[in-house]
Image 1 (cartoon, rainbow, N blue to C red):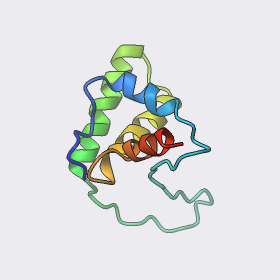
Image 2: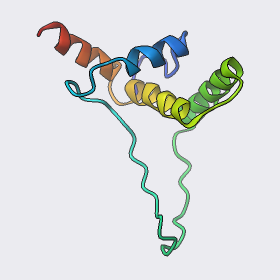
Image 3: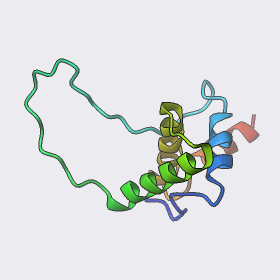
Image 4: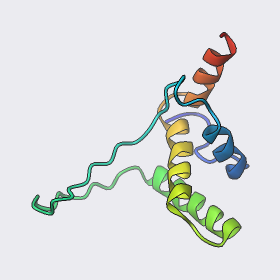
Length: 104
């Protein structure tokens, strides 16, 4: 987990900043979630996961819903992008792609 807080002080600005990056030119961290759409697989055991990450997601979702009045699928994707950016490395992943773009 990064030393950077999972949630930035200005969540909306960070969501906008990350959403405006040139995805075709940089790597983008993400979580992959598998889903059985056939409904034929037995239900797997649930894992507890990371409580800090879960709490950050809940807090972010509440902030966005309070600011917008509703929480849409696109908002959830942008929240997950912020959390992924800040949870894999010792610093936000976007710092690396920002540095790479600056050297071009």
